[in-house]
Image (cartoon, rainbow, N blue to C red; front, top):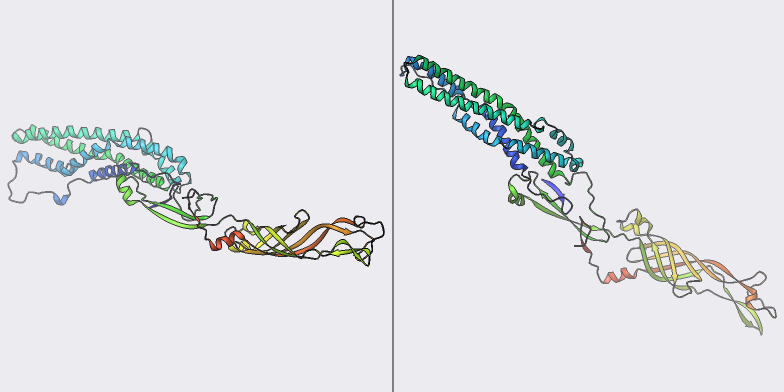
Length: 433
């Protein structure tokens, strides 16, 4: 059997090569049997002592007839007639095999039988006119034998009817011997055709194997299926086909073919996480403000809010190397935080952490704040000089602190209660079924 990915390989239809392989084999076998069709010595009938013997004048004719029948047996005649009928198709078969060789030369380049196919297609039996000459040689020899056989029969019958005619008996003996010799020559002339028929059958056998091996799965050789655009459960259908394609027609082909279905999960290309959570900030100086203390304007400090609501965009860098490993989602770097309880144009969060895909993460990193800070010469608790405003005592600056946050994957939390049903995907095409 050959195994093909359903939907990726060409449809396997009966090629007719199987029937022609059988015919070429049958011709080669018939020509071999023709050579071995003589009467064995153990089957020869020898007159016993005391048995009535033919007339003395017909004894040479009886001996010639026995020699003839030792070669030209009924089996010989049956095989010769059958081979002559079937051998007329050999040139046509050889021509079709040559065309198959030409068409498959490119397609079979990746087949393990490519070198063997190339050698078979260069065989002598496939050369122009080679098979025609072999068939014509056999036909000429067979016709010559038919003529000699008819002549020998007529002359032998005449000699049997007139045993007193010594010349007629001699002619009968000579005609039988000549017919026997032509029969032997016919067998000899059929030997090249026998070898060519056997070689042609081997050519067809290789062709059939090559046709079945095109696009077939091979042990140890990875087969590209498709690029999948979405996660899901893939279904891979494998066509199981008999290597002997076309030997018994389409009906038998359908009965002996089968299909195996395999299933495997497709990991989604999940590189980013979007989560929402709460963070705590620290490490920042107080924001300067103006307050009244003892009837005087004093520079005071307002602490930065410690808790902040964050929307986090997280990259999973290990997914680029191990996209299908669950542990590849642990590392989150970088993580960008966007505050929704503070001004996102003045507060910036960036860091890294660990997380669990579809669950949540813990992130820490620097917190950047664009806010007012005291100029040199001013400090918290200082009384503002008369006629000096807060704007004169402060200037915009970038403050650096840190934050730690805990967040949840809201989509994963939703799927925790409402299970997602992965799509069924055709593994050969990558399309949803």
